[in-house]
Amino acid sequence: MRIFTAAGRPLVSFLWEEPGRLVALGWSDDEVLLCVEEGGNVLPYSVHGELQPNQFSLGTEVRDHHLPAPFLFARLRRAR
Image (tube, rainbow, N blue to C red; front, side):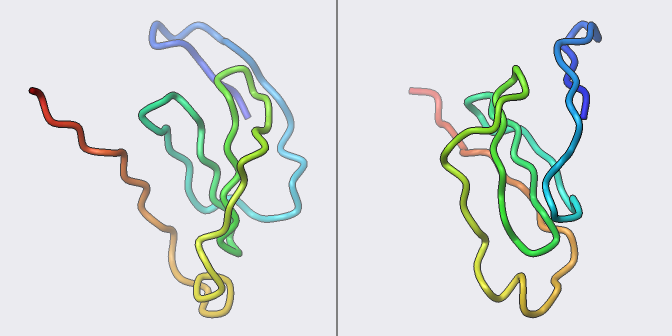
């Protein structure tokens, strides 16, 4: 896994050592890399490649029915 700055400079690289196969990647609004495994587990990483403690699952339906790659949506913010 390699993370780059917006200017294209390398920021960090690390080996994917988790047991699941990756099916989706995306950035959250607060700059957390969300890595979704085939079984529905979501592993959040900091911009420095550090696994965050707030891992979660998309539910047993994803794991049991082998759904195609999920879409990741960012929060919508309204200008005030």
